[in-house]
Amino acid sequence: MRLVILDRDGVINFDSAKFIKSPDEWKPIPGSLEAIGRLNQAGFRVVVATNQSGVGRGLFDMATLNAIHDKMHKALAAHGGRIDALFYCPHAADSDCGCRKPKPGMYNEIASRYNMDLAGVPAIGDSLRDLEAADAVGAQPILVTTGKGEQTFAQGNLPARTLVFASLQEAAEHLIGAAAA
Image 1 (cartoon, rainbow, N blue to C red):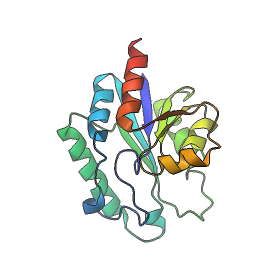
Image 2 (image 1 turned 180 degrees about the horizontal axis):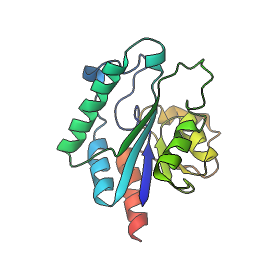
Image 3 (image 1 turned 30 degrees about the vertical axis):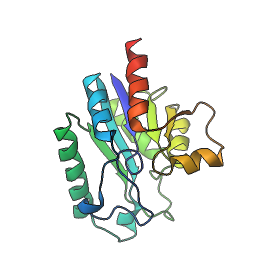
């Protein structure tokens, strides 16, 4: 089974310093939905692992988070794509949970759920915490320079094996090409 793990905000949809708090605020980055569709068509299972501390901070509730994800699923379906599983950490940044990236808890849950080792599995994010969580489980960290990605790249200190692409679309084309080779 080929698996790819994506962060949500800044990778699939535009990010906001004020959080994505409603379905109306969720707007896909151009090309991201098509990229997921292409990954699906190439045989990849696409999983999302996202920190959603807005829930823990009381900025939005679980019903709103579900409505945001429903909008994402419907938009993806219209582009021939799908998310096979969605993992999220609802805890605030100051909580001591094991699931909030950069901790690898969500990635460990993905490995458990799919009964597989995540060594080499591509994990695409726009922040250092995404890359660190991926690196902690041996996944292939991939930085996209959308969202916070340019700032993350400029700050340096990326895990040694990090690949860098301009967008999810570019990263997807690389993965599809590598899988076909």
